[in-house]
Image 1 (tube, rainbow, N blue to C red):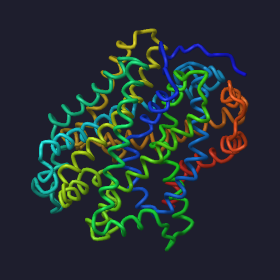
Image 2 (cartoon, helix red, strand yellow):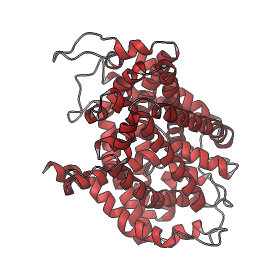
Image 3 (cartoon, rainbow, N blue to C red):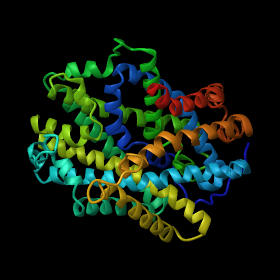
Image 4 (cartoon, rainbow, N blue to C red):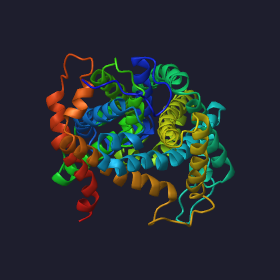
Length: 468
């Protein structure tokens, strides 16, 4: 048994098991579930991707999330303090893991601002304008959509970005139990009701059955070894987005978790909630776009354009589409907000622990940093659109280095630390605190020592191998 840790990441903690589960699930549920998951599923074989993702969610995702929460609860520290508390030689891993949310938060709030703009327009009856209005043509002759026109401005994207960033900071300033926990208990049930309701509605559309089959039935035609490798890399990479892994969030939230609550049971509840929301998001988007496009799979593989260009057209073609579109963007805005809150909290916890400043002052520092760095992403599509980093816009660059490089490296070294340096017993002892058994112990050991490291290497090398 481990001794009860003293929480130093912040004063206070979650007041209940339900509060922890909903807050952690709220962190996991975000843009990755509602926007990224559906188009990846469509791109990588529908049912094949779903099957591979589900297998990795209950094995790979479970093992990494359990590890991070256990480390957080056992050390009672922020991510910067947690890793050196486990082993002093891994201090750089703590700073790497803290840098990930610090870089993600600014551009995540920029995208959140875009969602907020679309939500506002739909709620004020402007859905048809978003779907149909053209703002001229590009040099290549393509129409300039409402979305392209909007992000090409400076004032409006900046205002919505600031509103979104400050909204998350206000919740964080209220504290863990009075802010994050209460907000999550209120918001997550609302989010679940919205996503279930909208998904049921889209399945009633004429032709939705064909889109549903495309989404859930595996398509093995032309499924080569290279495509399998890409699908595995995409599914595992999606887990980072969907489950808030390798970015210090679960370590931070784990440090606020009560000792009497079951880690293993909580992780299972979080991953079920997270996977359910991702799956239901696919039920909303894939059949609806499939019907709208006349069964064209290419219509689903649009990246950011899927949510901001294609879906508004889909809603405009639906019965009661204005209302459904408004509900959808409310859903996306709330889901993204829970994730931005967890990102803000993680960086705030680091500043509190290292500087001993109050929560409000620490959060203020985070917001100033978020606004300064986030403005690069705002201006990168407008006034500074000619400036590129390695050929990428600022937002794309920050997204690439965090998700394709920093997070897999952080996860790989976490596996090395727990699997081979301090051994899995370090985590197992914390999981067993107050519990009679650790039912998934053998699965956990196998994943952390062997499977997870291999998956991290696959993610890191796949872009190079597939190019060759």
